[in-house]
Amino acid sequence: MKINKLSKLELENRNFKFINGNYIYDLTEENMQIVLNYESYTFKVIDLDSQEEYTLFKNSNINGFHLKIKTKIENLFALNIDYEKLILKKIKKLLNVDGEIIFEDSLVFKNNKQKWFALFLKIPLHKLTNNKNDEDIIPILNLKNNLEVIDNINIFSAYHMNKKHWISVRLDNGIDDILLNKLIKNSFDLTG
Image (cartoon, rainbow, N blue to C red):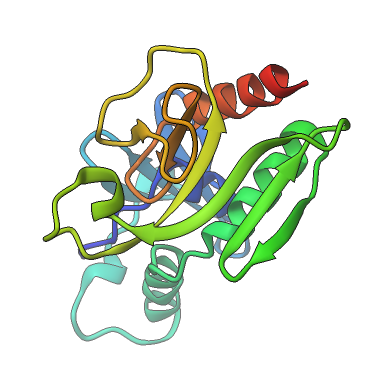
């Protein structure tokens, strides 16, 4: 069974827990766990009663309980990601700050002095890569920055902001969650 690759941020917001190098999701009702190795992006379903791998959902002609497990896994890894909601939740949890809508598909986050420290946008990828063939619309978070973090994969010189003092973080490409938290907190501190 092939699953869609979700970012670490998306996994966290879907209630996966990072434990011993794996992302764990509890299927409480079924007394099972999904154990996802992020590096290889492979997963196992573990029956918590027997502590063995449960594989019956992988069969082609299934129904009942096995189909229920398969459907839950497919829904869990579906690509209907609301990055705006994810960022709202993350910044609220980290800094207890709510975002404000400033125009369609964008949010601004302000510190207690009403200075912007984060801006969520959806933009064409080519605005970051300068490659006109990159037509996908992607979610980004602009943050004030003083760290050496630009990798031109997940972190770029800022779109639509001062490139010397701001960065754009691509949210849909597997940005490390610990790094993202650090960058958000740093931006908040720099603008305070």
